[in-house]
Image (cartoon, rainbow, N blue to C red; front, side):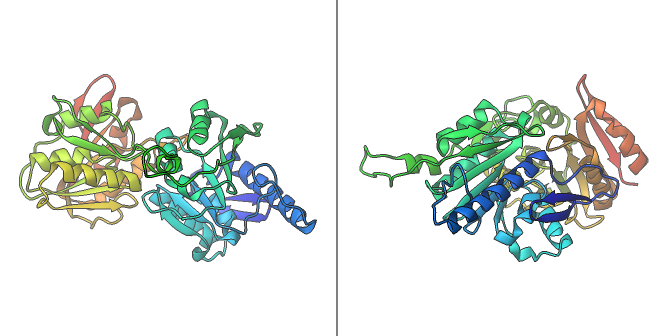
Length: 413
């Protein structure tokens, strides 16, 4: 846990789940830059109001008394700092929502001060101040801007923030195309702000030739689908659905492709968990190969779980039992209830490289597996997962390998 100094006071913040020895902070320079700008702009707006002058909300003062929406807040730092203004936080991350609640409580703030929405929920109908933490995924930014655009008008203040390495010409182009004229600030501590002045949107003319800008704003291109190519076992020919932000959304990534070629051949009534399921193609392939299997798809991304359910429903008989869980690894899976866990663990947390998530997935798998149950993991060879699995399970076998990837099996004794 670390202390963030904001213009409105200090906050004790931590990521979720909190790791006592974790040195990674729950905020960065981009969050600090945005909060500092908002405090200065709010003070300017109050001064202009006291002087009887209207503020230019796109360039100067910001009135935080209206509907404030925070998108992409990573660990709840922005929502916690702005809690006195009762913001709406929109996030695709279950862990972000948990972190936000924990950080509010840690600072003595009622959790009702922030309304939590997922990226799949319907956004507010009106937004006065829209604050965006630029995501790593350009497609996710595109999708969110399309979804939010109908609630944004000429009077809406739009400010985004990100590290210099996260803001590209393509990022600014999306703001321009979907919302309106866009400019950036100077860099401070390797972070920038993006200022967007939303253009007016006329009601679309349904007769045929009128302005359909409002329709275009509300209708983004996601989700999209593709067909899995041949040569990857039971997954061959499956139709995969991806919502925005899913890794390798337009094609099968090479790690998953390698995993699909080497999945265990199992039969009978087994409980199989697709952990960190993404679009669900791995678990769906298992369900196709073994119709008696009971599948549980788990991911901390709301969009991933929605994608997994769409992929499963498209390819598997509706009588096949399946559960779709947005959650924290295997926290909701009963101990000793799983026969097989399949896992392609992430080794990044936003811009940081870390094995903390993989380690928690492995320890959770050991708890969830019955005696004799198996954890199958695919990963880059250089990550050294075999060492962690041997330490945890007491065994680890290499089931397949190539110059880049390895598939490992650990058995719960």
